Image 1 (spheres, rainbow, N blue to C red):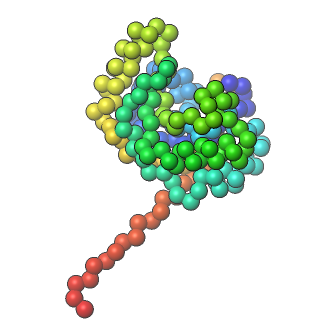
Image 2: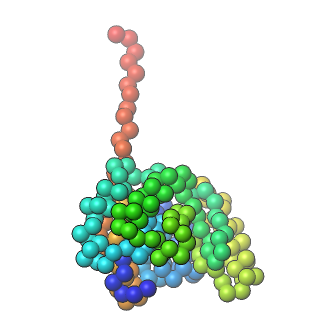
Image 3: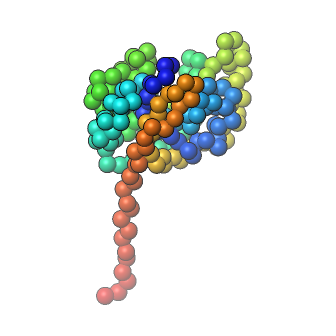
Length: 186
């Protein structure tokens, strides 16, 4: 990925303790400074344009942050992933970003709007090694699922040489819970 490329991600800090060690071993992006996350759109716009587009990104995100759980490890071709449930917020936001900026996620390699996911590990060259890797990860993480998640921000990342750095943060809002009082007596 070239220097200067940007990406919009939703960091999932609740997942870091669960998958951080696996990501450190089997996801090159972890070593490049990217936290456990769900990608919303990558590649995004050039850095200057991306910063100018943040109000429009905020509009697409909508008024409420997502509440979701990571419920099970899935094996996709070449990947071990956790998928958010429910995923409606992600589907809406990812499609909205693609439409608003006339971009395809991952350059269209995985379709118009790929399934939202948190990558835990990339596969191995040898299918037997990949299968064993998946089984080891599944055995380790499954006992800790489902994992409730309430991310606090969307990050705009920029690639600089071999590292990704946070260029901007958009704080997410959770609707307040209305408390009802029950009165006894008059």
